[in-house]
Image (cartoon, rainbow, N blue to C red):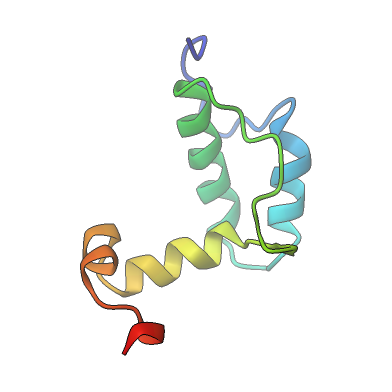
Length: 87
């Protein structure tokens, strides 16, 4: 399905436009390794990351989203906690 894993450090093909846009969103040193890992994950699942994710018409910074979720205890903790907008 995904054609095998992408070697670490490899950013390629259709992912490059999205990756470059994501890298341009901030200077964090771990942003590029994060994007490499994310691209590997998408490649292994056979789902290339070909378009910039958005909410409404605003670009979604995947690194900031990842860090925000991590700081709040991970996906399950975020999913189980009530959102601030519902309180």
